Image (tube, rainbow, N blue to C red; front, side, top):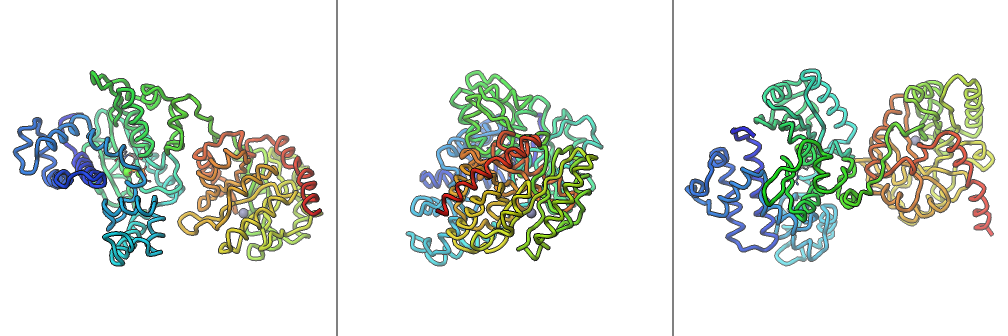
Amino acid sequence: MGGAVTVSKVDELVRAFEEMAELSDIKGEVRFKVNAYHRAAELVREHGEELLKLDDVKELRRYKGIGEGIAKKILEYKHTGAISKLEELKEEIPVELISLLQVPNLGPKRAKLVYDELGVRTIEELQEAAEAHRLAELYGMGPKAEQNILEGIRHLRTTTGRLPLHQAHRIQEEIIAQMRERLPKLALSPAGSLRRMKETIGDIDILAAARDAAPVMEAFCALPGVERVLLRGDTKSSVQTVDGLQVDLRVVLPEEYGAALQYFTGSKDHNVRVREIAKKAGKKINEYGVFRVKDKRRLAGETEEEVYRALGMDCPPPEMRENRGEVEAALEGTLPTLVELADIRGDLHVHSEASDGIASLEEMRAAAEALGYRYLAITDHARNLRVANGLDRERLLRQVEEIRKLNAKGDSPVTLLSGSELNIGNEGELDYDDEVLSQLDVVVASVHGGFRQSREQVTRRILAAVRNPHVKIIAHPTGRLIGQRAPYEVDLATVMREAAESGTALELNAFPDRLDLNDENLMEARKLGVKVALGSDAHRREHLAFMYYGVATARRGWLGPEHLLNAMDLEELLEWLWRGRLDKDRKRAERKR
Ligand code: DGT
Ligand code: CA
Ligand code: CA
Ligand code: ZN
């Protein structure tokens, strides 16, 4: 890749040696080895540019602190972009343990201790253990160390403020559009967590393919939204946007584009598994391509499909690349077909001006028409939710009538479904009686208060709603708000089992703060055969577009059109909504006896 050494290569090599020091420390390697890696990191930090210009072991060894082993690793990195010893270490040490190392003041020794002795696997668990003073009791630790670790976790939280997906996504779209304006022919793609559509984003990664990187860097660093250029190298630049977000742009050669896209899309855990597959097959994969080990022959690199194919795999959609079984499925050729925005025929959760929305029924319908929908369920808040101007019985019945009239006019391809978003009360009670509910097409129910109640009580409340014959969708089933409110305590497994059995759908609420159920919940729902209903929870016309993030999250949960109510056409949906009401009614009667 040309002769020039870039700043990013030096940074990466420093990090590689630091990681090797930490990981070999955890592994319990002899002290002098650990120290040698630390020293190497320091040396590269200071003299990296010079060191990477050298081409043989002897010259490198002239530097004090560089022995034969380190010299070879520097050269290996220079030529292949990776250090096999580091890859080996990463494979030996559990990823959970590696993730604990992010916590300042913890350190490799103590990370290993809490991992082994307390079974701590996540930063959350580490925090819990520290707050319960279980760390102080460990050998070599005390109240002071415990306090420091808590500080470290707090520091990590405040400095790693992650941005919600939709905010980062909007910024990314803008940057890509502006780059396309300036360099219309440039191949350009999002990478990293944004390409995987993760619910929060640390930084934005963008990849470009070009023979000459200079004009790309030039254009990128001069974009109007750029507040500060953090790093400007030959092939990588990082900027801070006016929103305070970091954006990394890498430029690679066209023949390496697919390999780089694969590498920088991640996730890290996915890539670790893919490297294992390569290794077993006598191949090697890095951001430059796939290579055969025995003769270093290049097997692939230009497209992602070709990269995966060279490893005997299908290409998993980016949203699946979290090492949750997609690698195995890609090897077996059993990757599922994921839902796409174009599969969505309607929205099953929206509000109008009748409760706390701002648009009329006709305005919402027109917006749904613009999205090409076939139906739109009006689910205004119900009687007991006074704060949201919930509809009493009379107002609701008048709305049902109004919807009937609007549909009867037949001047829109969108059929409005009459519905309600019921409030699940403290004892599971709902807002209206059966007589009212039986006049609605879609009855949604959700929890809007009592978030601190016991797991038993919340679960009991939700199960009461699931068992109600008219309720067909439980909305935002865990109540979490991303970055603001943890989910309430609820036995989701039991809710899912009863939902599956009774033909009640659980919602994937697409409102950007919610994304509830989340990706992991959705994988569970899929396994248990629970139907999922997508709802934007729109309170104004523009909100209907949130469906995009709902579909993205559904894809992260491995859902296909067959799992979603919204992929049904109108007739099929109405059938589904009515079917089971009688069945549930019978079951309810049995329970009463
Ligand atoms: P983020 O930014 O925290 O939301 O998450 P990502 O996944 O975008 O992570 P980022 O920006 O640090 O790196 C982008 C991708 O580059 C990541 O998903 C995988 C790849 N990558 C970065 N560093 C490493 C590494 O040390 N090892 C491996 N295997 N892959 C890496
Ligand atoms: Ca990133
Ligand atoms: Ca990045
Ligand atoms: Zn709502």
